[in-house]
Image 1 (cartoon, rainbow, N blue to C red):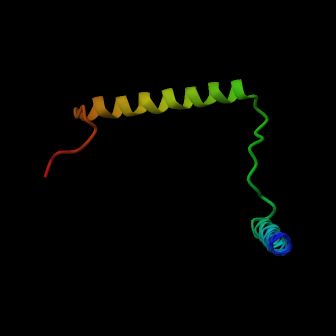
Image 2 (cartoon, helix red, strand yellow; image 1 turned 135 degrees about the horizontal axis):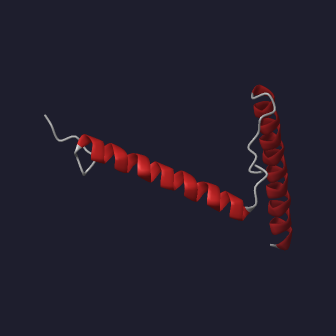
Length: 82
C-alpha cells in the first residue's frame, strides 16, 4: 500500500508540474499578444490613498445619478412610460 501511494504521489506531482508549465507558457503568450501589458495592481498609491480615490469616485457617481433623477423628475430612476 505504501508503494502504491508513493507512485500515485509521484504521478500526481508530474501532472502538476506539466500543468503549471503550460499555465506559465500561456501567460507568457498572452503577455506577448497584449504588448507586455499585464495585470498590475501597483498604481503607486497607498491603500489609504486608494480608499480616498474610490470614495471620491463613488460620491461623484452618486451625485451624478441624483442630478439625473432630479432632472428627469423620476425619483426611482426608471422610465415607466410605455
